[in-house]
Image 1 (cartoon, one colour):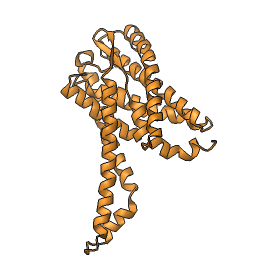
Image 2 (cartoon, helix red, strand yellow):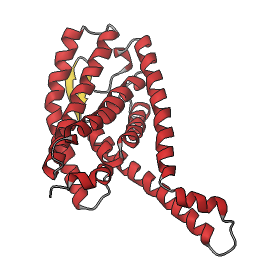
Image 3 (cartoon, one colour):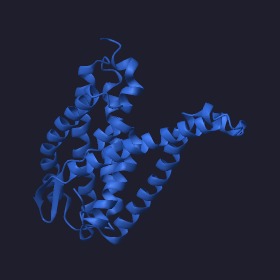
Image 4 (cartoon, helix red, strand yellow):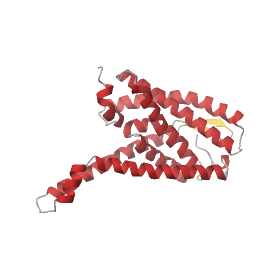
Length: 252
C-alpha cells in the first residue's frame, strides 16, 4: 500500500504532507501532555524539594527517567514489530502492492496517538532508507496507514466493544474486525488519492485495491489477535487493557 511518488500529483502530495505534519505535531503535544499528567506527584516533588543530599530528589528523577525509558522501549519494540510485519508484500499490479499494516495492533498495545507516531517513524524509515514508498508521497502514506489505519482502526474498535458486553470474546473479536477494517479503509483512501491525482480512474484502482486488501485484512485480523493474546499471556502491558480492564473483565 506504500504509494510511490509517481502515483500522486504534486497538489495531492503537498496537501497530504500538510495534513500529516499537522497530525504529527498534535500527536506529539498530546502524548507529551498525557505522559506528564501521569506523574503530577513526582513533578511537584521535583519542583519543591531541593537536592539536600538525602537522595529524595535523585529518587524522583530516577523514577521519572524510568517512566520515560519504559515508554520509549515499548514504542521501539512495537515499531520493530510493525516494520517487520509491513515487509511482507503482496503485489497487486500496476506498480503498487498490498501488505499488512500493524496499525490496530500498535494502537491496542500503546494507545492510538503513540501508535500513530510509531507508524510515522516506520513509514519515514522505509521511504528514506529502503525506498519503500515515495518521499513526496510520504504524507499520503502516513495519512492512509497512520491516521486511517491506526487511529481510525482504534476508534472503530472502541465503537465495536462499547456495547458488546465487555467480555474477552468480544474484545478479541473486536480487535479482529477493527484490524480488517483498518486495512480495507486505508486501501480505499489510497485509491481515491490515486484517482484524485489523475493517475488511474477510480473505477479501475478502487476494485483492485479494495478486493485485494479485503483478503489481506483477514490475515491482519488473525495476526493482530494472535499477537495480542500472546503478549497478554506474557504479561506485556497493553494500553487498551489498562484502560478497559474493569469493563472488559466485568462479566467474567
